[in-house]
Image 1 (cartoon, rainbow, N blue to C red):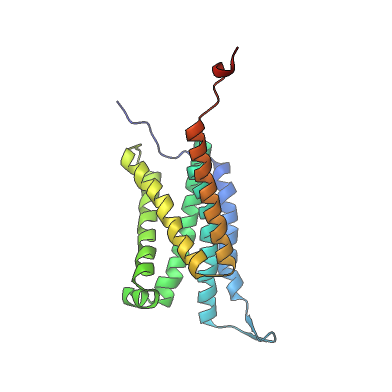
Image 2 (image 1 turned 45 degrees about the horizontal axis):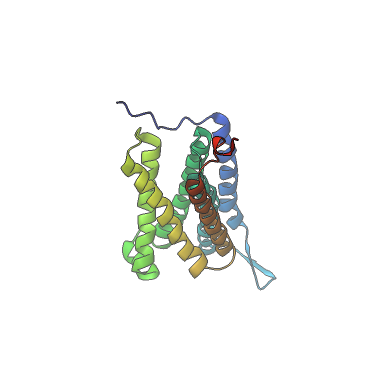
Length: 214
């Protein structure tokens, strides 16, 4: 028996409605740090270090902003092509924002040196960040290019949608503070609510009309 084609068939309107805000926000994340930083409320300075730092910060904000709806769409009940397409687009653009963050942290700040990464971040955080990047990229390759509904793909995808936000929760909510912590909390709440709705619907199922018939 042939396996049904599970490759995405995304419409132009679906792509535009996610790409346009992503492109605008990414451009803002890259351009806003170009403005001089205000020091002591009166002295404006511009440094390359500040430019790199804020681009890394804003790109991780953008990552969480797109990852949040992707997680909700993945775990909420329903399997319509529209829901799947928006999940994939948000999941993809979230990853692209994360790649930008990865470039500015690992590439620029740590000079593509794993030794520096592990020395500054510690083994646990550095390893989890590298695993996030590799696993997220692998899952997207499967989602875009592999026409299969194999069980192992679904299992690894579900695990990825649990593990990756778990690492973000630790780094954004437990370790960091400020805007990124708020975004991390919203992401976590969205994930937990979506899973709860899915489990509730699975447990109770659709209401049977015949059961209430007289």
